[in-house]
Length: 68
Image (cartoon, rainbow, N blue to C red):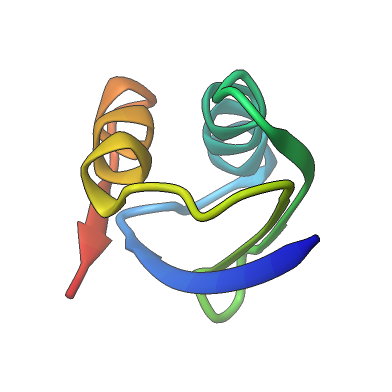
């Protein structure tokens, strides 16, 4: 199990957190997702390394931007 942390830009409320969490949780191999609204931190625990492109696509599908 490994955990990676990213920063998401554009979230302003609980619905934003829920949208990002749902899209990222749907990625193959993801076990746990935690999103901190105040800091924009997105932590993902997964079985295997996740490609940054897959994470970026999931965040963008939710309507937000992955920073970096």
